Amino acid sequence: MLFRQLFDSETSTYSYLLADETTREAVLIDSVREQVDRDAELVAQLGLRLLAALETHVHADHVTGAGLLRDRLGCRIVLGARTGVLTADRRVAEGESVRFGRHVLEVLETPGHTDGCVTYVCHEEGMAFTGDALLIRGCGRTDFQQGDAGTLYGSVREKILSLPAETRLYPAHDYRGRTLTTVAEERRFNPRLGDARSREEFVALMRGLRLPYPRRMDEALPANMASGVTEPEPLAVSREEAARWAPVARTASGVPVVTAEWLAAHRAEVRVVDVREHLEFYGGLGHIEGAELVPLATLEASARGWGRGAAVVTVCAYGTRSGKAALLLREQGFTRVASLHGGMVHWAELGLPAIEVRGGGDSQEAGAFLGMDI
Ligand SMILES: [Fe+2]
Image (cartoon, rainbow, N blue to C red; front, top):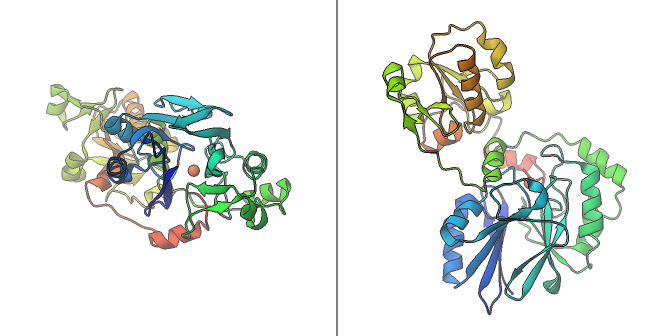
């Protein structure tokens, strides 16, 4: 079998390209959107035909490349049945298999990090792709995305560490440069899920972890629920609205929006209301100068005292919460309100200025995760 382990250094994510050397049929496990050019080029250079982009789960720390790979290479998108991702072409459950050429990956449902986590096992090669259920000497966190430590313990011990001892295990991440491990090694040395740990000890250990809010979660989760295809929707500007206070367009779902470029040029003329949480406002994406922090849950109460005629632009990471906020303000009688299209993520992509207040650099932040999936 042709096998390549690929790495995204920004998010410490491993992607795995597997192919049948005779038929040239291939699958790619856990692609990263920023690496789609690299991966598509490799597939072409090796003369492969990509049948499927597989995901081990809905990631919270990076955006998948699956949607772009499907557009470019015509592959199918495959996820666990319990992920709820509607853009998947196939959702696989326990015991089902994914075939490429003469090779077969068996699907094991391994929930606990998320409900929809699966492990792909290639029995004939003695390899398993564990996602974030089991990391090298660690495991994925269990404090969000339906995470549950007791469930993860059962998944890892009964499904993964019960595979033959020599089985090579390939995780979705490693933050210390390690590339693979084996069942025997993890049973002996994994400080969380090895043979020496009881379920009770593991649950207590996971409960005691104080992990920071994942830096890219607000961007990654909605994007990954759409397989990473998040091109801005076409905007239809209404002339009446354009004549009023701003070139307000409406998305397909009816949210009034303005562009980042417009807001950057007219920032001083509008009330910029950032509806994210405190940690995000002061976190990696930073915030727009002069923006007021009003988390979405408190917006309704806060806005009671505001003049209804004021021009308001709502902001969040990605545009989802700020869209809700804009609609909520419209219901409250605000006539000049719009959401920042694409949110702070798009603002940052355009290189527009943001105020950033944070404790340390990326490497320090990454180090704080101590081998945890972010
Ligand atoms: Fe994860």
